[in-house]
Length: 306
Image 1 (cartoon, rainbow, N blue to C red):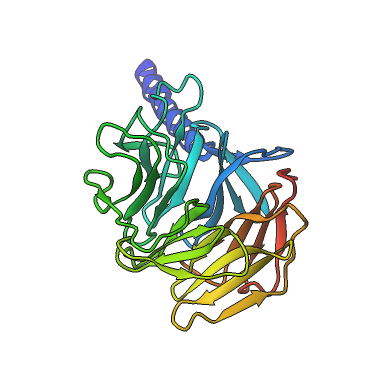
Image 2 (tube, one colour):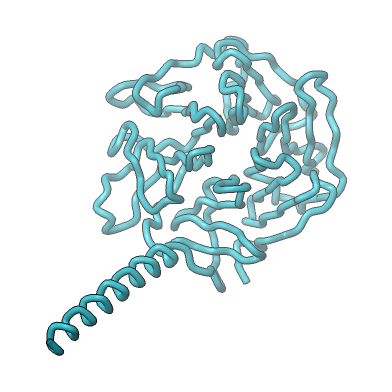
């Protein structure tokens, strides 16, 4: 009888131990990033409940919570074209060594902050450097630079997670170079391509574009519900601006300035709270504002976490 009781007790302890390990493993997917040096930021945005700042890098993902950076301990892929959505994020890029995944990743999606990836399209074929998505609807846009098994070079969008693709007609897009593009968070028919010649805006899935002339080349751009946030080089100075989509009136943010050759490469607005914004610069500085750009805090300096 005593031996039987010990067996039950031993079994119970084993179950508790295993459950504890499982819980610890889940929590350990993100750990505090101390004395990290980030050299290559390939995407940025807000994800999760309430909107948490997140960076996609050459060596995985980092998020910013409670005044500190946290990094992933596994699945540290080289994420390219990273784009958070309401359900999780889309991305492309290259897998980390010894992951067992094909290179390149094609179009992938994660709904658990990168703990697992769903392979949607072009797995092992294409690395999309230019990718955008509507936060609410999940409609994804890509710039395909090399012909693959399904689509040729050009801009395409998919409303069903990469199963079917429609090519953008690009009527009115007169620029020969593209800096990048962004998609409206809820109106997935609305997207903007930014170039050295200004901004080209479409409200019909890229069929037709109107040219918004700017005073200098655009280095980054993002949508709010009723406006565009963008950085622009003007007279050798970089400015941050907001344009009303209805009347095209432009306001300049005077609360932040940028050093020479340190222009923003990503600007983001939290789709769940538009007063929150984030900027990533060429030199891997990251700034956030929680009050609509009135004040800014630097949360990453030269890519170094504290």
